[in-house]
Every structure is written in C-alpha cells, then in structure tokens.
Length: 429
Ligand code: PMP
Image (cartoon, helix red, strand yellow):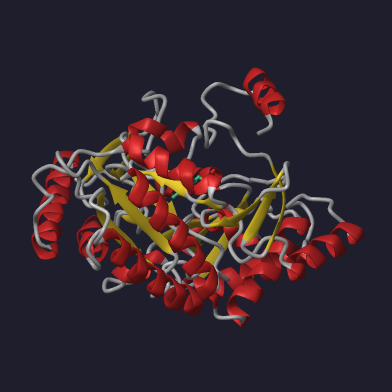
C-alpha cells in the first residue's frame, strides 16, 4: 500500500521490530471504532482497543484535555508538583482494590513491570522470580527475563533467576484434557514443587490474569487465589500484570485479578497501554509498605508528564461515567456467542474463548489438530482486505486471532465485524 514507506521503515529500523501484514498499513487518522489508511481505506478496528485506544479513536474529551494542557504547561518532571499526576494517582489508587495504595507512573508497560521487579526484589532481597509459561511482560532486559513466550524473548542473559510455572495456558500436552479443578490442583502442585526447590527464596510471582500476547488464554477462575495462599506462607509477593486486562475490558471484572480475589488483592499491580487512549502512560500500584521500600532518591522525567496525565484523567472519567465495563460485558457477550455460532460451521476453529471484549479464536488444522499459523495469517489478511483489523497471538505457533476493540464498540459494529470474520474463516480455516 505504501511501499516506499515500508522499504524506508525496513532500512531505518531494526529487523526485529514486528510489522503486521505483507503490505503493512500506514494509519493516518481514526474516529470512534474506525481508522483510515494513507489511501483512504476505512477499517473497523477490532484490535486497537488493547494496543492503545481503550475507549474510542479521537475521543473528543481526551483531545480537548490534551490540547488544553498543551496550552498551559507540559514541563515534565517529578521534581515539581503536578496537579494532573496527583489527581490521576488518587483515582487509580481508589479503583485499584489495593489498600493503602501508592501509584508510580512510567511511560510503558515494560517500564511498569521493570519498576515492579525493582520493588519486589528490593522488598524481598531476592532476585528469584516466578513467572508463567507462555507469558509476555515487555522488551526491556528485565522484562524479557520474565517473558516465557520464547518468540518474544530474544535473550536469556537476564540478571533475574526466573522459574516458569504452569497455569497461564494448558497447551497441548498432559494438561490439555484436565477439568478446571484437576488443572488447578496440578498447577498448585507444580508451584509447591518449584518453591521447594527455591526454599522460599523468591521475590514475587508475576502473572497476566489473561495471557495477552500468549493468545488470550485464561486459567480457571480462582487459580491465582490458590497460588496466593501458598505465596503468603513465604511472604512472596503477587504481581498482577494488568496491561491488557485492566479497566473493565474483561466485562465481568474491572481488573483481571478479580477473577482470583478469594485470597485478597495483589501486592503489586501494573498497567499501561490504553489508560490514556494512546498517550504513553504506564504505572505501578502497590501498598505503601512495598512501594516505599526503596532506600534512595528516584525521579522520572516523563513518567507522569502533565499532558499524558490529563489524557489519562479524561479517558478514565469517560470510561467510568459511561460504564464501559458494562458495555464490554454486554457487547462482548453477544460477540462471543456469535463467534461460537460461526465456529460451529468452521472446522478450522479449535476454540472461541474470552471474556468481555478480549476474545480469542484459536485455529487448528481440522485433520491433525495441529496449530495453524498460516491459516491465522491468511484470515488476518482477508479481514484486512474486507476492512477489519484484528490481531494475532499464541505461543511460538501464533495461531490465535485476537479481538480487542475499543470499549465503546456498538452491537451493530460487533455484528459487522463478526460477518467479515465469518466469511474469512469459511474461506481459510
Ligand atoms: N505486559 C503485557 C501483558 C503486555 O501485553 C505488554 C505489551 N504487549 C507489556 C507488558 C509491555 O507493554 P509496552 O509495550 O507498553 O512496553
């Protein structure tokens, strides 16, 4: 579509920077749940909601807040008092579910997880960390050190000692056919085994409540509550990575951890991506005792910048005032039902899963049951041609279609996207 820009991108940027589509798209503008490319083609956006655009493209309330703040002051440094930063911290502390919560702002999910690891390792005086198989937590040196999805973890030279436990994904091995209760028991036994090996010298367990990059896979509800009971026996912290699952996306809950709330809230929560609707805001929430364990000054030049904080405040207010969690539950519920009906006639669909507006469609070869990454790529391309953007994910074989629209998605738009997916799945799966 824009071959000149594509070849310039290839020449100027690293080879390992992933790009979607054989002929990548240059986005030029967006509105609501739609985006347009440089040739004027319009797409219904079924993926941008989880990347950056939590509520809607060009949401007027956010645009206005950003413009007004830009006209006032954008000088950014945590060395000075900053009203939007304090106000957003107060609101996030309030909705976090963590008692006596403090908030530290970063500029990305990677940096949020990095800060969470800094806190947990300092608090516990241990560099051993438990992470989940098939996880994704970012691309910094420490974040790749806790990323179990090898396709996104380019080095194993991390200074952290990481042990990977079962629970985030069932995979195709011995866990595949267990009931939820059997799977939970098996994962709890695996965790106990790991802890036995470490003699409890572990800083934290970090987990995505629903694995995002890993293909929108959820453990049985309550699994992390069982884990937490065991972790608490040793004083080990529970870090929940809510970068994809936060802010009501899963419909039933405001945070993904709330599906595992029986043993209380997590010790540390990380967030990023859509909170400021595309402006770079990430952060860490922790109870004061954990947040304040660092024994040196720190500063962030861009974390908490007034302009991104103003965007976050406007976006979060919109989300809460318009009950977008409720919308995710209602419209997402209808979309999952519709996709399950489509899957019943598409032999290449292994499973439709998800919660709210976080829906995965896993493809497999109907003859062999093997993962079908080529079919996933073909469906992605066919949807794009038909004017629908979706995502891809999964383990190294990447055969899960990922659907995560902005949270204002309407029933009519859900139906429109499902119709396009139906045609593409019939053709290629
Ligand atoms: N955690 C999770 C669960 C993510 O999905 C991502 C991004 N895909 C990150 C962390 C890293 O966020 P960022 O790209 O903003 O660094």
